Length: 385
Image 1 (cartoon, one colour):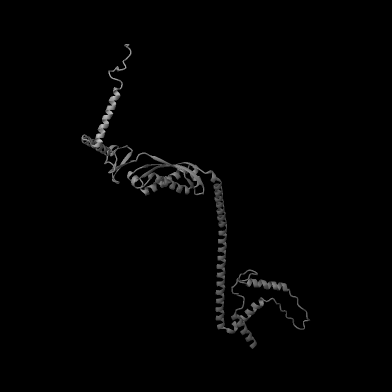
Image 2 (cartoon, helix red, strand yellow):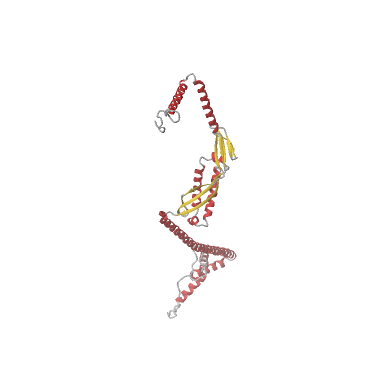
């Protein structure tokens, strides 16, 4: 056999090629034999089983104790609960340990970082305009105790409160106030104040940093309706102004007429009272004169009554003596009638030609019952004479 041809029965390493595989099979069989003895409880299984159980229990205990290890960042505060009740707050940053679960539980709350939420609601303004708003709210947690125990879900609560406050503020503003860059900061400032007030009332432990109204758009489908609504509001304003102008024109005129009527009534009242007082005074004077000279007074009253009655008569009596030749004297009757009317007008209470006394006004020229009685008594006295 040549020197460079290896012997198939010998390995260059001094062993046959299948020696390594045989050793591996032998070891596996030995491990299987020992495991079977351990499971079956053979004579050598007791101490080994005890060691395995002890090691397993020790590993479980170490793992359970290690669940109490924690580490907090500088911006975080740790709240430790013992059986669900508040125990303490971890203020310092770094690693620490608390009793393992379920005895104690650690909750971490970030009180330094500023968070943000964005919303896109549709809001109706005070002048009946629908707008799409895009606004964001920046906030941070200030009190971990309140954040964990006062509200169930702080971020959901913040979103609902923010949208409610924005709807209230925009609902009290016009579309121009929301769109204009000058008045928009006022809207956001009022919204921020209202959101913070509501969160404080909930005792939520959330502080609002800012409220930004980034975009305001009018939805395309509602633009025609908004134009109609704006036109209706303009018409309403125009009608209101017309009504105010009409009221400003009518009310002073009505007040002037009412004042004039009231003054006329006061004047009429004064005139009637003066006439009544004058008649009463005249009656008292006539009564006093009658007591002093009854006959003379009766004669004077009769003559005055006849003068009054005949002065208003429209008849002209012409007395012609017999034997005068039967000539009829021509009299200007029209002038006599006009003169009689003028005298009647001057004797009327109003003092104006052709004016009649108001209804209910006592006629000073008309004969009274006492004057008529006096006239009848005077006539009888003359007939007696």
